[in-house]
Length: 222
Image (cartoon, rainbow, N blue to C red; front, side, top):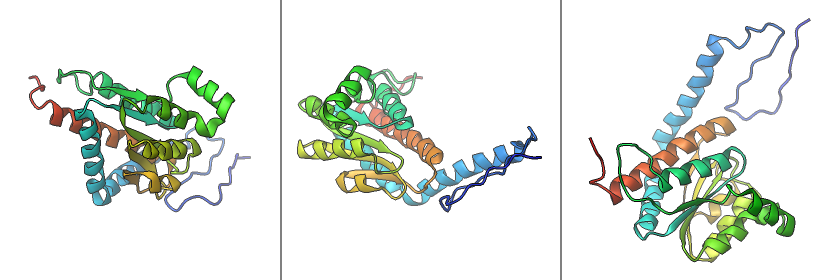
């Protein structure tokens, strides 16, 4: 007898396949479908988010121009994205661009800080505590949350605004509670976490490339 999984209450743009004991059930058509869904989310970004992407890129470029640190935070896959994007700024995005390092920091990268903060203040405060500590030299916080409701990202954005930092959101699922505490945000028009994450890193790369080309227009080498 085949093995079946029943999935209920999925978001409108979610899809699922009933699994059986046939090892070939995840076939070429399924792969094509998964890639098509990812493409559709990118197309939705083109249709509805271009102005938001540009505004966020301009905000971050203004901060980078002042040599102030851009902070990033997020949980899980979004924590990985925050480390990824901070690295692109601190090192460089493209090998053919030779330019000075830009100050950027992922608040999700130090397990000592994360565990101490969670132990002493609770997990909801792990990023806001770090924002407070780095705020003297920081100019912006990029909060990444596919749901838009991550409690610790929300608290970080509130703290950043209170301390005078610009708050930029990379969000999904309608923007959630975090959207109200963002000076600018890109809200990916999807409720599917994996596709929101795929869009976030694409948008993040656009931010980094925009910053590089505006601050260092002569740095592009053949």
